[in-house]
Image 1 (tube, rainbow, N blue to C red):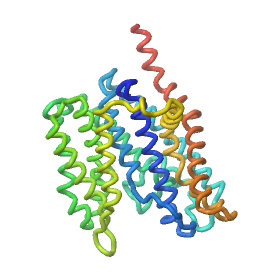
Image 2: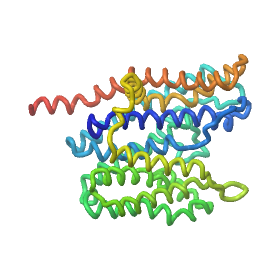
Image 3: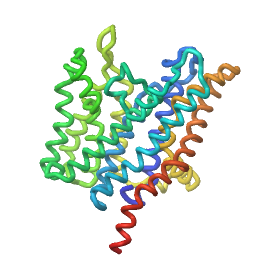
Image 4: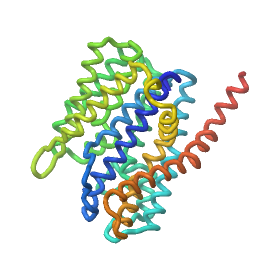
Length: 356
């Protein structure tokens, strides 16, 4: 975290983003992917939470980078993200095979291997997600790696860094007509594999950090943020048989989210207006939010379908998916994420003690 003074505000942001992801998946995407599920009387149809988590990740990459050795920073991010992801893939694979539903995706060993290797963006026609939420993981791993390499070079500082940021937003925008115009498969693999059409989310996080620390002026920040918003609008166009269709609801939701994050970064903490019991609950959920994000979707749909088969309506189904995701996320955090991070960071801790 940027400092203890900002802890509650950012914990609330992280927790809120994951809750928005869960609400979108449980009330909207669930019935789109599985039309046999009963319609939800209330839906949250905006794809906003996962995108905002990428913005938050980029912001905190800037906050934490430079506090120790660059290798320790990079390895710390890998140690935090990768073991939990690999464990989540295996657990979800076993759960989907243990509780099969006729007509639904039933993964085999090849699907397990493809998901462990994160091959979906490269060849989505061949490699299916075990859990669709996992699309952000390779984006974060690549983002942290790129940030480390940039920071270690002359391009990660000063005016050169500003030029890199603008290029990361403008180049994919200029290539957008190619992306939506049925490009060659090799081109699509490169663009989707490296997530060029989502680079603006990382740039938004970096820009918010630079503005909050007064490294760029208000006008420059506004121009850069508007460019990121335009890139998000183009990203949310889908090429359908009826032509290009825009998801303006999700686009505006991400725009609002970017502005909220900027205000959180620059403004005061919210600890004085949030009751202490609520602060404890928010901090606890934020601490397991990555595990919840990884575990809630695919098996949550199985839980909802099983409940519907036993006569339960949409309300209990949604509640059960939220609770199941939270419990599984807590278990993943406690049993995998924290222990694995401690073990993988021991070489750096021993080295620091030897110099103490």
